[in-house]
Every structure is written in C-alpha cells, then in structure tokens.
Image: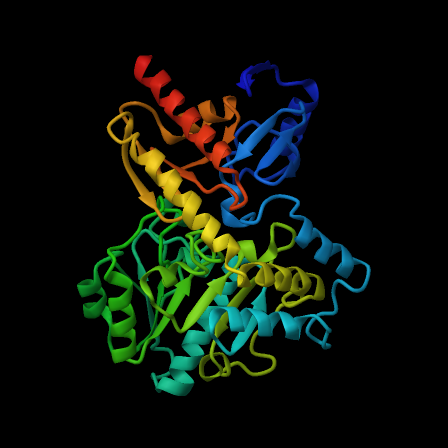
Length: 415
C-alpha cells in the first residue's frame, strides 16, 4: 500500500504479476523500487494503476529531453519507415550528417559511433593505447592510463578492473592491467602518477555514481595543463554529465576546459535507442584503421537519425539554459534542507547529490518514501540520493518534488 498524489493505492494483482515475472526470469543485477511503469510523457511516468510519478532520475540522464519527446519520436518514426540497420559494411545516408553535426557541437573533427556508454569508454581506452604506441612512441605493452578513485565508467571486465566499487568488482577477476588510480580532485597526486608511459587520463568532470561529486574549480584546468605538458590525452567521460544536464553542453564547459576526447552516450539516444560516441580530432581518432575496431549496431541509421535530432535540439542552447535556470532553483531549495536531515548537497544544473544523515535514514528508505509520495529518485552509496529530472520538467513540479523530500525528512525526524 502506498500514497501517490494524495491517494491511497493498493498494488494490484497485475502489478504483482509483472514484478514476480521479472524477479523470476530476469537476472538480479538491479534492485528496483516497486513501481511498474506503463507509460510516460515529459517528466512524468504512469504506473499500471494509472498513478503518475515525477521522474527525478531520467534513466541516469538518458531521458534529458523528456519521455516521448515529440521531436525525437518523429525523427525515429520517419527513419523506422526507411531503414534501421545496415552495419558499417556499407554506407548509410544518416551517419555522415550525424557525425558532422556532433563533431561541430563538440568543436572536434571526427566521431567514432558506438551504442552504450561502456562501449564508448572501452573504445577510448583502445584509441588511447593505439595513439600511445603509434604516435607518442610508448614501448609495446607498457601504456598506462590514469583513472580516479570513486570513478564509474561502466561494468565491463576492463572497466571494473579499475573500479574501487566492490559491488561492481568483487569476484569478476582476473583484472585487466594498465591502470593507475589517484584521488579525485587531487592534482598533485595526478602529476606524481604521470610517467613516460602514460597515454591518457580518464576522468568524469563530475562524478555521477559517487554521488554527484564536483571537483575544485581549478582541478580540471590543471588536469588539462598537465596532460598538455606531458603529451597525455585528456579523456572526459561526459556520458552522464554531458548534453545539457549541468546547464552547459558539456560539464567541461563550466570551467572552460576542452578535453582531447569526449565520451558521450545516454541522452545522445534521446531515451529511444542506445547511442554513444567518442568525439575527437583526426590526429587521435585517425589511429584506427579498418578491422581494428567495430560494432554491428554502432552508427546504425536509426540511431544516427535520432542522435542528429538530439544535436539539433542542443544547438539552440535552449535546453542548456533551462537546466541552468531550473538547476539554480533546485539547488537553492535543496540547500535550505541542510541541517534538517541533509548533511550536504552537491551538483550542477539539474543534477544533485543529497547526503542524507545516516542516523536518520538510508538513501533507499528515503527513495521508497518519495515513491509513495509520487517522486522517483535513486540512492547510491548508502545514504546519498540523486535527483536528475528531465530538463523539460516544470518549475512548479520541481518545487513540488523538493516539498515531498522535505516532508519525508520530517517524517523520519518525527519517527
């Protein structure tokens, strides 16, 4: 039983059947909240009971432009009636124009199209190593890449090899070598870790899974300077932070930093199809030759058509401005909760990490109470919850969501 939009709701047999089916036949690699979504529009989703919830997760920023975005659906429908997949064995009439538009948006020259965010990260690792051997002159098999403590770049075997999240890492070894970990935000530690065999620094401009951790303002500019001075590639994983989420096209823009490679995904597919990309200049991405890397679905015409529509929407700057303005409102409201069940609030734009006082409640417990009140959010690392509503969210709905959080905290404080 729960309370949604002020009404008492009893989980129906249909909802229980759906949950039971998923629990029985789907591997238990997630721990979902017990809400069964049946439809969605804009910033709202509707469950099988017909009850509406404000989506404050946006599929980890994959739905930046809202559910069922009419512009993106129109692009997908038009392409569905033409051709959806050719593989890169042939040219298609969508990929080139998508790649050109995305490269121009990022101020770069070339795009390597893939599907998922983890594929983009894996691709960048391969590109960086090849660049190190073929351009920088690193001895064969000696390349190293520096990563950050608390990072999250995906869950493939190579990526979890340099993760310090034991849930993602434990019992999946042996692990891939070639990575060095330094504290996030510590430029001196990064400088000390770079040697003649370092080919890249892989970094999230804002760490998402760690709880929306924002580094010191001078950190990314210093990383850029160190990478330039030592002939090392600066790889920015903007898979969650990019494409409008932080109030800028890229989170790197917030501190006027331009990396050598952008890693993009999630919102690039508009919440319709998986689309990811490595974006950089020819002197780096040009190290790849035919047969050395590929993907059957990477760069497919359907994905390219949707991705081009996403880029077109971002080119106006409208969504970045909206995230910036609404984000200021969100952080103002959340900041007022510090000392009232909240220990700290971090983030940028429409992206916030909220540390709940662990003596009051766990992040999961707060998210369950929010769900009962019609707000969907996600916890991480015990007592932290994350808010990342679609950029199309209305200001009054955003205020309402914070009101629900305030009420939930009051409930726990009064318990």
